[in-house]
Length: 361
Ligand SMILES: Nc1ncnc2c1ncn2[C@@H]1O[C@H](COP(=O)(O)OP(=O)(O)O)[C@@H](O)[C@H]1O
Ligand SMILES: [Mg+2]
Image 1 (cartoon, rainbow, N blue to C red):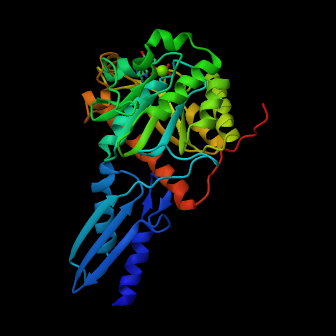
Image 2 (image 1 turned 60 degrees about the horizontal axis):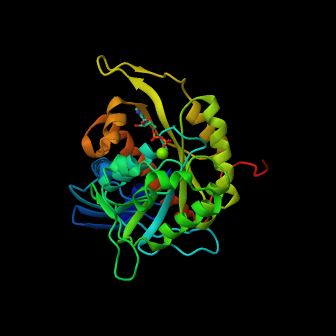
Image 3 (image 1 turned 180 degrees about the vertical axis):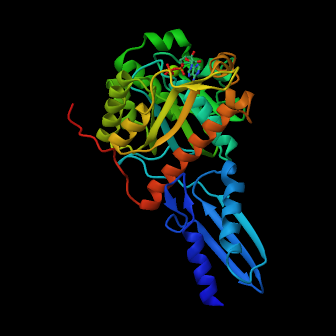
């Protein structure tokens, strides 16, 4: 019997996880397997939230077990636990936050903020506790996108409470000092205000804090990437070749400060005709994939041009909240599992993988 169990255990360990890119066994996800009088009970624990994969994973496990002779009944338990992953050497994690995921882009207007809020909502839909922090002094757009109104509440000891939006905890430099004020700050003033927002916001038990960084790779961005304790970053781009140079620059900035790049997120990948459903690659195909391969990270997701995505963000209800079962929400949820899965893999590897890029600029 025990050899049967061992064989089954091995079989389960071979199931591949598309989000981490590792077999379950190698990721240490097969926690338990009990086999007794024709029944099997399987216990899987992932390192990232995966509500959207649960039923697919359960049927893969069932299939693997059913093919073993003599087993008629299988129960499968799937859950996850998000660990606190390593941050840059010399920094301590933010209180109340297990992992900061920084969202960056080489230039503005590629949909960084759109990706940040919808990714946050998607991580939440996958089963995580999530916050969003808007650190974009050049254009704090999170208040508009999440419909934040008013000012955050102070606590008794002069800290500030995040605001609530669609189940997320949220804070923005825009609600603290006003959008106009933030945009006229330069250099050290901006960095100091941002640092204060990082130190003073009281987050409540977050698995992930998604941080919308200012676009570009200048001094402010570099300083933030250096000073905020970040577990991983995502670089947002559009598929055009001109945007791809900016991805290289962003990856190189993170390499400099030893923050792993979890992947590239491609926005405006294609246009899907709302009338006929035809998908057209307006800006060409393969751009995100090839730059991701070049710097040695996965393409974690592709989001189409979508009128609802633009509109709903402007109205304070991002598309993942407005149409949680829609096509675009599905894309963001896949992106969320890929990014979070990748982050859990960094921990499973016990070493930080840096993008393949030379740091000389
Ligand atoms: N996939 C998309 N489809 C349609 N509109 C989009 C999409 N992504 C972003 N937008 C719109 O493009 C504009 C710029 O996006 P935004 O997220 O603010 O970019 P960034 O933060 O990089 O400056 C916004 O008006 C947004 O609503
Ligand atoms: Mg923005």
